[in-house]
Image (cartoon, rainbow, N blue to C red; front, side):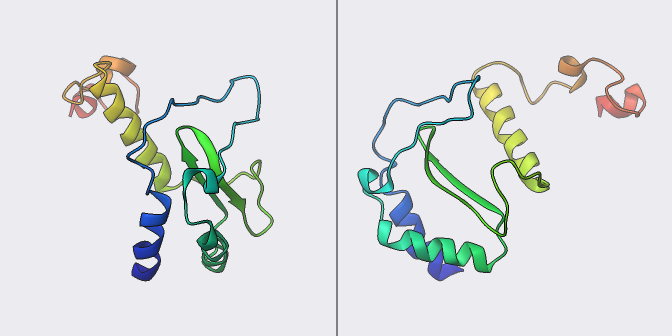
Length: 132
């Protein structure tokens, strides 16, 4: 695994120093703008070996965005973009990221209780337990 990271990270993230306008996909369409890896200066000769690695390790879906645009998108084992699949811990990671962004933008404080934003009785716990 370390071998892949040593070569993958510099290839895929070599353009992080370049800033571009962020793209947000339309809310009324499933079509997102894309960006070609070769136009971003990525190591395109490694993409196929990345896909083989992901497939061999039972990956169901893989997507990489650059400034909101899809650069790499591949599904494995009969899965598609519409296939239902569990998020498991990825949902917690996404939630943590969004909470951090919301705090950074002054929309909430992680020092407040959850009830500040969701109201009391948002769980089956007692009010005292929720406040903790």
